[in-house]
Picture 1 (cartoon, rainbow, N blue to C red):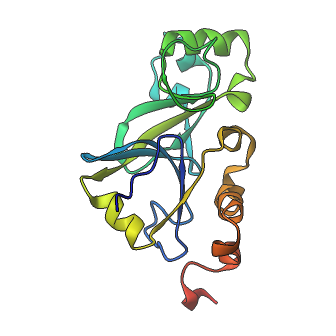
Picture 2: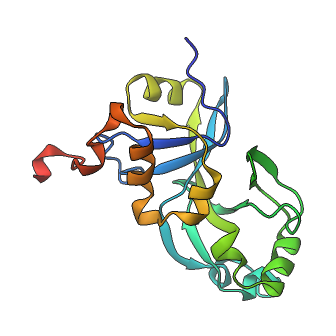
Amino acid sequence: MELLVAPGSFLAAGPDLLDPNFLHAVVLIGQHGAGGAYGLVLNRLSPHTTDDVLDDSLALGRAKVPISIGGPVGLDTLQILHRAPARVDGGVELCDGLFLGGEFESLGRYVEQDPDAFRRDVRLFLGYAGWGAGQLEAELAAGTWLPAPPEAAAVFETDPAQMWRHVVRRLGAPTEGFERQPPDPRWN
């Protein structure tokens, strides 16, 4: 049985996953195949804004837009997630209306013209979550991750602090009560 997760799907960290990078994390899968997997942690805010990490000669660098932590790998890379293909050039559609990547200049123009765009249509991430060949499949088989169907609206409309609970509740009966469990029973 092949345990591949489709692009655009969510992975909710299982309640026993205690790694601080992924404790109660929700990961959006960007790619998963025989060579490994790539995704973005959706619910880890960072203290950084675009003016901290981008040159102020770019419109986006002057915008002071919040940035999330996409995962522990490649923290020197900036990832774009958006649902504004008519305004942000480029990107790959992961699921209905949700795009990964895009052109920074068009994104900067969009933000200059519409400062609320980030709250509504765009998220930025430093780094990403990555798995080597076979690693994610083994973690899925062990129950470390709980796969969930795509939900593009949740990326922009769910409070990051509540996202894990939201995704776990959507899974229904098999995960009922998980959102109330502490990750480590010793925390009771």
